[in-house]
Image 1 (tube, rainbow, N blue to C red):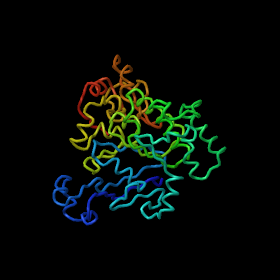
Image 2 (image 1 turned 90 degrees about the vertical axis):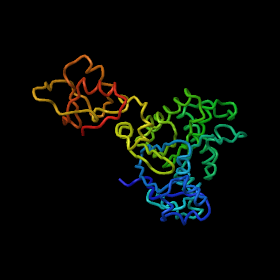
Image 3 (image 1 turned 30 degrees about the vertical axis):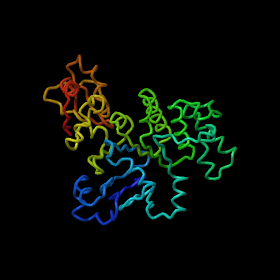
Image 4 (image 1 turned 180 degrees about the vertical axis):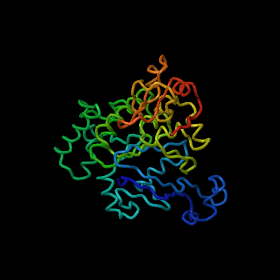
Amino acid sequence: MNPAISVQNLWKIFGSRADRIIGTPDAELDRDELRKRTGCTVAVKDISFDVAPGEVFVVMGLSGSGKSTLVRCLTRLIEPTSGQVLLDGEDVGGCDDKRLRELRRHKLAMVFQHFGLLAHRKVIDNVAYGLEIRGTGRDERHAKSREILSMVGLEGYEDSYPDQLSGGMQQRVGLARALAVDPEVLLFDEPFSALDPLIRRDMQAEVVRLQRELRKTAVFITHDLSEALKLGDRIAILRDGALVQVGTPEDVVGAPADDYVRDFVREVPRAGVLTLRWVLRDAADGEALDGPEVPAGTVIQDVVPMVAGSDRPVRVVEDGRLLGVVGRREVLDVVASAEPVVSSR
């Protein structure tokens, strides 16, 4: 399957003559040393990754790690210094202004932390704004906007103004505005970080629900690990503009690439993220194999009640094939451990 988005050797360096740094020994300096020597700052450093169609790809890191710069480079809201961004195989960097506007209007939509709603316009006209820019007629764009507002739980608020809504409701309007143009790719730049924790949790659940229904390709920027684990099919972790690790939530929690990632995931309850694939083993000689069958993708914590009071291991299966077994010892070791789990497979 061809990637929906392909990022290849992407750099963004701020400062004069930034393009002359790439390919020189200065490019290997750490961020602080480079700034002292050249006055330039590396925000994105030689990053490559692909995003599959329908995938939610989460980019996370601490403040200043380059994640927001990265997502803006994907649409050339910030011009990359070097590298390529391909959207369905088309080089975004090679687009002239007209073609770039077409991509932004028809293929891409962005949801920002700051809602950017038009205060003097009703909710329905905020949602319809992208369609209006396209030239869609009023009746058609309002009909589409009502459909999307219903989808995000704002039916009945069409004639309200943004300042009459709560922060969570305003962010739903922002999400509806992005969805109304039916983009192929959604880009989220820390959209929920300004919301209260309970509202933030509701919005995360809303994104999960909509993704199940719509299967949009999405790149989601966050600094919150729990949000990344909840939303991401895969997670990319940045540090000082460089890519440290890319993997599934299981990969990141179960096999952190280095101490930086290990510190990120140290407090994560591993039994709530890792699946049975990480702890299964071959059946020992003489071990009964009449235990219940459980899919390999089952999260470990879900089998705790099943194995806690039994001497029989569960049989871990995938596509009708027995992969191995998991018993009480393997499950309780993960539940009790605060250390990364080394997969036996």
